[in-house]
Amino acid sequence: MSKKYPIISVVGSSGAGTSTVKATFDQIFRREGVKAVSIEGDAFHRFNRADMKAELERRYAAGDATFSHFSFEANALEDLERVFREYGETGAGRTRHYVHDAKEAEKYGVEPGHFTDWAPFEENTDLLFYEGLHGCVSTEGINIAAHADLKIGVVPVINLEWIQKIHRDRAQRGYTTEAVTDVILRRMHAYVHCIVPQFSQTDINFQRVPVVDTSNPFITRWIPTPDESLIVIRFRNPRGIDFPYLTSMIHGSWMSRANSIVIPGNKQDLAMQLILTPLIERLVREGRRARA
Ligand SMILES: Nc1ncnc2c1ncn2[C@@H]1O[C@H](COP(=O)(O)OP(=O)(O)O)[C@@H](O)[C@H]1O
Ligand SMILES: O=C(COP(=O)(O)O)[C@H](O)[C@H](O)COP(=O)(O)O
Image (cartoon, rainbow, N blue to C red; front, side, top):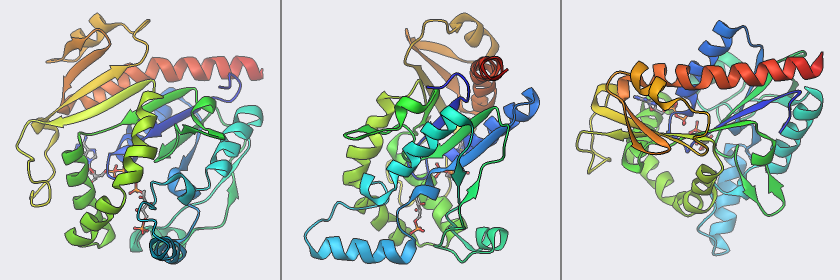
């Protein structure tokens, strides 16, 4: 936690929608005049694509079938923790990009499956924004969650998460359904042990739930639309959250528990703006005051 240089961490599995949610945050930052520096979790993968494949094969041959991008050891989490700590103390840090596909290759001038060089953060920013797989990890020797001031989980129910991943990886990254299915299976052990526990560290979880049949996620022809889904929003600490205000502003929403509201899927953007804007505004105000 840092009053001076606050950190927002948005965590979700591959295909959960963290990159999509980033657009909502960027909109709030722009509207509120917040200067944010953004980092992607993929920047902290320990291996490039070819080296990851070699490491996977090496471990598989040695009898370890649990290794994947979700595993703690596949990521330089000590570097991520250091970046969070240093930013919180000094406002400085560095990041890079993992290039997934041809479009990103054109943007960054680096072949798919490789990283760009590390580059320092822009100076004089109000906050650090992280989006990725491991931004709320708290495990033996590593505590990334402890450095983040606002922690958000993006967690569709699992069938929907798989559908989103399959469609995105096929459309944007050129993989087949079979290849994505293999990746989902290979990552399952680390999904349970490394990804899921983070959603008990988060301050707010956004869980998208389809209201159409997704019983066989491997054959669905399209991603359920916002109109075909609901979103459960759960607050770890409901104290200070104005539920009557939220449920009156978000048409069609209701409280399902003392710390949870349910909203129509097409109100996700509005709900995020209503919920997150005051929280971001407070972090930025306190940060600016502490740095003055
Ligand atoms: N709320 C949503 N409604 C409909 N589609 C969504 C929603 N959130 C994400 N998606 C879709 O799911 C896919 C994966 O989302 P993405 O943001 O790339 O996930 P991540 O960055 O977490 O891996 C994308 O095709 C995206 O358009
Ligand atoms: O799992 C992730 C998370 O990213 P995202 O949330 O964007 O899916 C990896 O970055 C890619 O799958 C890279 O693997 P590869 O390059 O082998 O496809």
